[in-house]
Length: 478
Image (tube, rainbow, N blue to C red; front, side, top):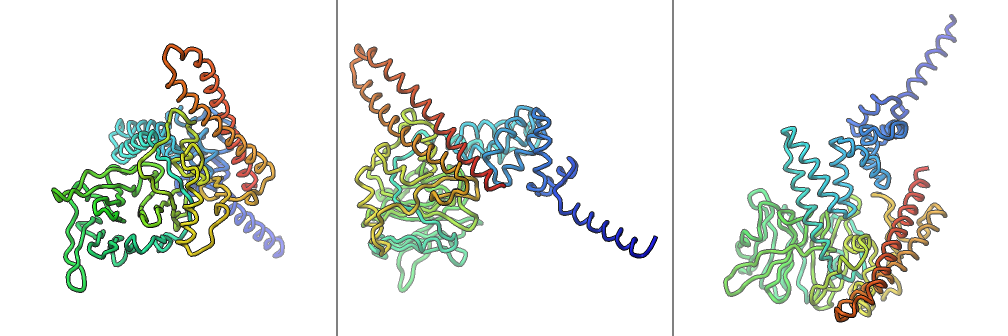
């Protein structure tokens, strides 16, 4: 064999080896190894092929569903993970718990976390983390029955580092002081007579107050144990009444990460009342913090990293309510309630269902003045439509697939019709309850028919939303 032949054979062998190492896994064992290494995108095609060939195999479906979840293809992962769970594949329950938490399907999340923790306990393995997540999901499910009707008038995606610079509160509202030098955030009252600060103590951040002393501040006075917990308390903000204090905590009572709490000072006893989680839509399974109420401009601000890239947060601006008014969870479709709790689209919070008609435009003008800009004629985003964890659309031109855009428009129309139907149903229910009991029989058939229509409209709207999302996702994948 000549030298040229040997050279060519060697070159071919090198090319084959290089191509083989660049290709995704080709065998099940290779895919398993890649999965264990966290290389989910490379392992996924093999698991997808096996799941399609063996649709009732729990392990193949679990691996495929987990890869879809880890690569951000959340619209594709539920069905295979459910197959895995039905076949009692342990980790499928964990992934379903996480997926349902992100989708605000908290009852289902709690059930799957409970299943997962139970399997761990039978195997004598630690389950505390998953019991804690189960409790958080159960608490979030209770919160869903008291989502506050809050008008969110704008939102800004900003870098997490230095996010408080986006808060344009008035000087009459005091001063926000960003975290620095290992301390948490702080708030100085407008009169400068008190500083609320978060400082490190015994391995966590605790809230304290400080009073002026000479040219600086006196020693910190920690807030009591019903406020400071073994976790972190941070981002304080006090109202001008000198009584109401908002702050964030990632300890007990949080449904995930930091949640915003409120407590009130009792000047008669010098104590703070038991703090309360302020609920949704302010809080979420993600990190929510730094709530500030600009009483001079009647605008509220808070930050959240829900559905945001790792280095970003979203600052929401809302109209503070004089008293808390909540949605009736039995009067609106569950999917509508979830979107309100998530703040999926800020324009949804302005309608009659939210009860803020006529308040939004004046608030936007106040915000425009605070931002030193001209009042906006339209919201910054036309809409918010989540494709996956990494892709969120705000304008029609964001769509790559004409078919997906057409489905999205159909979903918008169906959703608007659904809102009107829900409003009419709520009016009918109110009329029914005000009618003397002896006369209600004549109203009942029409009311039941309205309820059936709303259920059908909700199902159709959910189907169109899913079709639009999946169609666009498939276009992006190709």
